[in-house]
Length: 172
Image (cartoon, rainbow, N blue to C red; front, side, top):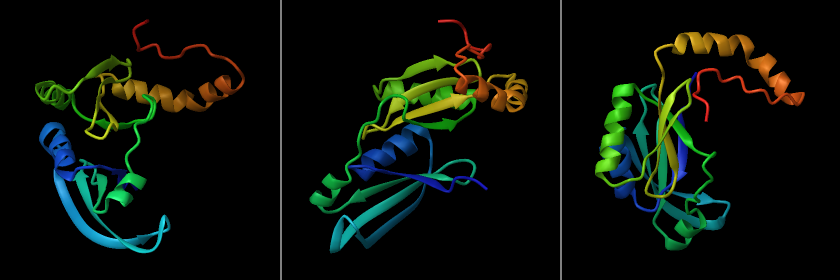
């Protein structure tokens, strides 16, 4: 039906809330304080807070913060390489507003026009790379073309054909 939520770990819920709610614009929709067991800490109750920031389709980005320093250290967020990131679809207007707020907070913004979408990238306070992407006006044409050719193009790739098929992206 849809993605319910993606979970990540943060070191400071208020810092995370500020980034996702105040800067990005995703509302805090739930906060659960819980205690439970983990296979990583057998026989021990661990305390954590679990926050959810709403996305327009009803899904959420969620974040755990752990009360005990040793538990927090065990599950500490790990910075991933550039190609491992979260991408959130937004309108062009929202993309520009998020960019302005990121820049105002002195958070580095990387921009890329992929042709089939325009994106900005920024890291959250724990190093999670987040992409905000807006569709171009011809998104319907692009989507229809990709749906019609995706399997064929994948088969070309698997057979060793590395011919670029993104006719929407500027060379370079």
